[in-house]
Image 1 (cartoon, rainbow, N blue to C red):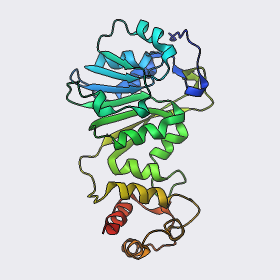
Image 2 (image 1 turned 60 degrees about the vertical axis):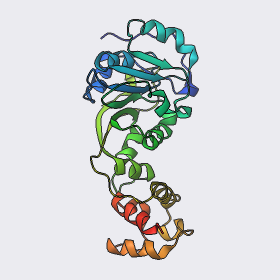
Image 3 (image 1 turned 90 degrees about the vertical axis):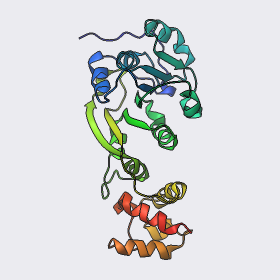
Image 4 (image 1 turned 45 degrees about the vertical axis):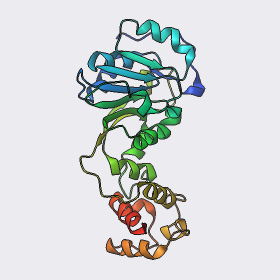
Amino acid sequence: MIVEHYDVTFKKQLGQNFLKRKEVVERIADVCPFTKHDLVIEVGPGGAILTKELSKRACQVLAYEIDEDLKEQLFKKLENFSNVNILFQDFLMSSLEDDVSNYSYENVYFVSNVPYYITTPIIMKIINSSLPFKKICMMVQKEVGNRFSAVPGSREYGSISVFLSYFYNIKKEFFVSRKEFIPEPNVDSVVVSFTRKDKLLPLKNKDLFFTLVRDSFQFKRKNLRNNLKKYNLEPISTVLKKYGYDLTVRAEQLSVEIFVDIANELVV
């Protein structure tokens, strides 16, 4: 077994755990049907083991790296990969639309072993961007992957589950042991893919929908009547009755379709 070598000082505060085997990054890259006409966005290239594999399959790779101490090693490892551009800046503070404006591509993908401490902000930034990602593939902490793919009524189901299921078909691709990383983290991982739905449920006000869902899950042990006190409860109650519920129901019991129906009913 060939293990990747990294001559760096790993920074725990940046969630730096680098993959060490090419076989794992090949499986990650296999999740997306890249062509030589596509653009791939990656966050946290780290030691470039995944970046190199992506660059072999895609037309262009745009990577964001916040740790400027990695510049020397990244440039060295990627010196023969002319289709890779690394922006040494905070992905969460970047304008994706501006950053890709000079690229020519057929499809755009997001593929990354994301820093686990900012997984949810990253996925929310992707959701809120105007880029039409054809598919997203992320390696995340196992428990986070369970939340992303959770269904109504399950313990892991929350606001992020609703947001993602509105836009994407979600699939847990494969498990990755903590032993596949350097240094070894305290958690196992899972690779999750998100494929954009061809047809989205009609939504009158996306911002209202997002706010409603967040408020509904604000206190998981409380029912909708308590979590949505600041809302007009009459139209909410009317919608719930259509599905056999009332205001005593908890948010984790409701599907994305019900939340969309409630949000649309609340639009004046």
